[in-house]
Image (cartoon, rainbow, N blue to C red):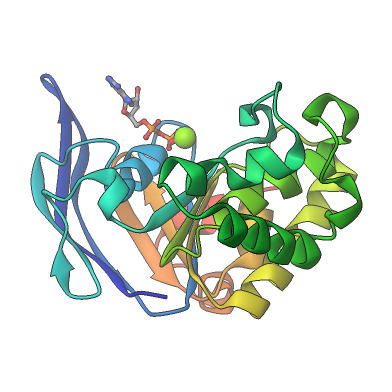
Amino acid sequence: MASVSFRGIEKSFGRFKVIHGISFDIADGEFVVLVGPSGCGKSTLLRMLAGLEPITGGQIDIDSRVVNDLDSKDRDIAMVFQSYALYPHMTVRDNMGFSLKLRKADGTLTNKRVDDAARILNLTQLLDRYPRELSGGQRQRVAMGRAIVRDPKVFLFDEPLSNLDAKLRVAMRAEIKALHQRLKTTTVYVTHDQIEAMTMADRIVVMHDGIVEQIGTPLELFDRPGNLFVAQFIGSPA
Ligand code: ADP
Ligand code: MG
C-alpha cells in the first residue's frame, strides 16, 4: 500500500499542453477512479504516475517520496492491461510469473506467488492453459493475476473492461472491487464510463480537458455536483 500525491502536474506533447496543473492526494489503500471524456488526459496522468511518460511540470510523490526521476521499474507499481496484452505463446502460469522471472526471482518463490494469486482469482484449474483457450473474463483475471504476483504498492487500471461485453463488465467490476477489499492495495482506476466510476470508487476525480473539475465520493458528486460539466457528465446515461 502507499499514498500518492500529484502536485501541480503539467504535461505537454511538443507545443500542445494536455494537462494543466493537476493536484490531489490519494490515501493509503484508497480506490480512486479517474473519469472523464475521451482525450481529457486520464491515460496520460496514469502513465506519468507509472513512470512511462515524463512529466513536464510539477511533482509526484509516492509515500512522501518524490518519484519524478525514478525509473518505472523502481516505482513498485503494477499496471493492469487489457486482456489482449497476454503473451499468447505462454501458459497462464508463465504469463503470471513472467514479471517475477524478469526480476530474477527464485523459481520456487515465483511458483508459490502464482499459486496464491491463482487461488484468489479462481484460476487454479487453468494454470496450464494458453490464453486462446480462455474466455474473455478469464483472460482479464489472468491480466490481474500478473499484477498481483508482484505485490505492488499501487495498482493502475486503464479502462480494463472496455473490451468485454456489458454483462461480463458488470461481473468484473464486482471482482475487481472484491479483490481490492481483500488486498487493500492503493488503486487508481481509469474509465470514461461514469456508471463504472460511481459503482467502484471510494472517491472519483472528474477530469475535463486536462484539469480536475471535481473530486469527491460518488454520493457527494451525485448530491452536489460542483458545476454544470460535472452535473451533466455524472447525470448522463452510459
Ligand atoms: P484519455 O485517456 O482521457 O482519453 P489521453 O491521456 O490519452 O486521454 O490524451 C490526452 C490528450 O493528449 C489527447 O488530446 C491526446 O491526443 C494527447 N496525447 C496523448 N498521448 C500523446 C502523444 N504520445 N503524443 C501527442 N499527443 C498525445
Ligand atoms: Mg485513455
